[in-house]
Image 1 (tube, one colour):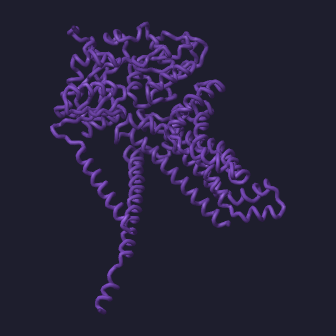
Image 2: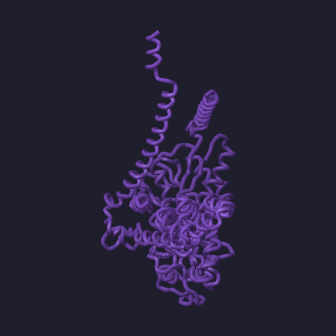
Image 3: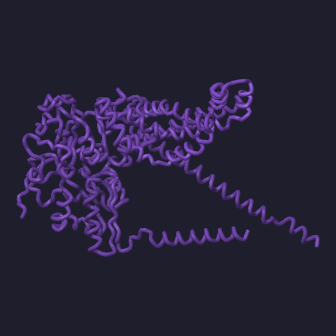
Length: 308
Length: 295
């Protein structure tokens, strides 16, 4: 009898077996994702770095060169792989579109959350969710058929360029930034508002002096998130920016971004050749930039948490 | 608990069925009934149409055709990943390709012409003028006999076969200045049609009323002039295989080169048939007159 009880107690119960099973499954899922992420980073890095190690391109020349012509070697016998036009193009469209989108996004978020929460939840929320779901090729197509001709008739030139790219990206990142700003505002505790109103502040004073201040870290995260998305967007930008590997001189002259050169060029190069490796180097720059964006988001989050 | 067991069972059965289905329909090379052709988007329509045609005549065979660009086609066939690599350029011209490992099969010819926006008022150019335009020596159409409009240059992407051919034979090996790039001919035509002062280049089959094809040194960009090389800007469409291609790939290429396809599909899709050519040109650009005139 004693023996039986001992056996029963020492045996794993059904619940603990199930727990073990669940833990294993989730651990395996985690492992799979981690391995995938590292595999991608290692692959892109090994491909991208071979431009510098096996083709002996100077890193500084790559980052600051102004001529992108991988098929041609320059007077020094080095291939012309200057990525500065693409890097600057990427940064300019990203920053401009973020600058343009931020006021609209914050305004919308304040309206939805503070001024008219009821209507906001009923009308604006679905609209924004809809905007998030529209595929980027549709935005690009609209940009090509509406934005580009409009810019052409107003400013002259071909209409392709940074301005067109900015407008398209503005519409694309607006919903992302807006919905994250809404979350940031929503996480401001209710008693902050109550306390401000009790002190005699008007609604605008409450929003401006209390709610927005408290939500600043969240808002910054939202903006950086939008920038990360704008930086990595390929298709829609490629359709409207003109893809000229030139340093941007004006907002309405054709320019290019890292992603647009990647998508137009990758099919025309041969794996393992310098032309192909140079494109992988651009991909590596993109990857590093998105890692930096992630770090910034983390930093902002941590700082915001500390000040509370 | 009971219900969950059911779910697990269902999931397992589903997985097994899916796996079985995947196994059944996996790409088998039994009797070499499937081949894959990858590469040039300019040649893709012809290979696709010919592939469908071929499969209806020889039941059980399947020709899988994909785009990806000339560079992709050549590198994939060199690695042995696909059976046929389609390209607009000679393998010798593509960097990173060992041409002596590949076998060239030419299946058609494509003429390439400069196109301009009709409002430029340009219909004729000389080669020297064309070079001046694309190398940025002239900036206004009035300098080469057109209206007072700024010149807007539009290029195909770096490494595109059309661009390589145009720069080699149209610009006499001069490189175009850095300018807008687009990665398809259809897009190029649309932009040239709508942008004042723009110039670019496309295959003959892409020319329509919305753009104007420019005659060069008094020669019209038409098929007859390509056939005797009076119009110098043209390229072969190649289907490359390894040195020892498998039987089906060989037979399929022979089929594309056959008189039946050359006289029907090739012409209908806007290519120039190999049989109509009165000259040949090698990878170095040397032109030889063909002795035998075509029937």
